[in-house]
Amino acid sequence: MARDTVFTDNVGERFREFLKVALGEDTLTENLNFIEGALGKDIDTYFVKDFWKDHLSRYQRRPIYWLFASKKGAFQCITYMHRMNPYTAEQIRNKYLLPHIEYLGTRIAEMESRAATLSTKERKDMAKLQKDLEECREYHDRLHLIADQQIDFDLDDGVVVNYAKFEDVVAKLK
Image 1 (cartoon, one colour):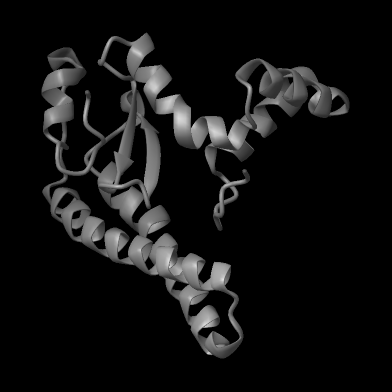
Image 2 (tube, rainbow, N blue to C red):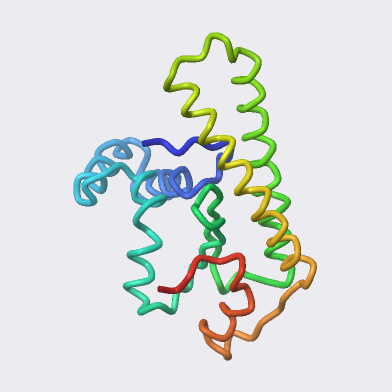
C-alpha cells in the first residue's frame, strides 16, 4: 500500500533513501524485500499503521518521535522531539497540512467534474476524500491555535510534561 501523498519526503521515501545511502543502491530492492518480509507488510503500510504503536511500546509511552495527527488519522506527521522548536507546529501546518488540504480539494474537484461517470468504488473513494478533507480542516483550526502560541519547551521537563503542551494536536499516549 503506497501512501497516497504529494510529499516526496514522507517517511517511506526517506527510509528508502536511507537504505540506498547506508547499504548501496545496487542492493536496495533486496534489502527492502528483506525488511518487508520481516515486518510482514510493505514499508509504507508499516510506517502508516504500525510504527507509532511500536514506537510507543518500545519507549514505554515516552516517545521521542511525536505524531501530530488528526482525530481519525486523515493527516499524520511524525517529528523528532529533539529537533522541535517554537515554530514546529507552524512548519507542520504550512509545509504539510495546508498542501495536503489543497491536494484533497483538488482530488475531490477532479472527481466531481466527472461525477456522472464515476464507478461505485470511485464514489466511495470520493466520499472518503470528502470526510478526510473535513477532518483535516477541523484539525487545521486546532493546529493553527497551537502554532500561534509558538510553544517552547525544556527537554529536561521530560516527554509527559512537554507532550501535554501539544495535547490537542498530537496522538494520545495510550
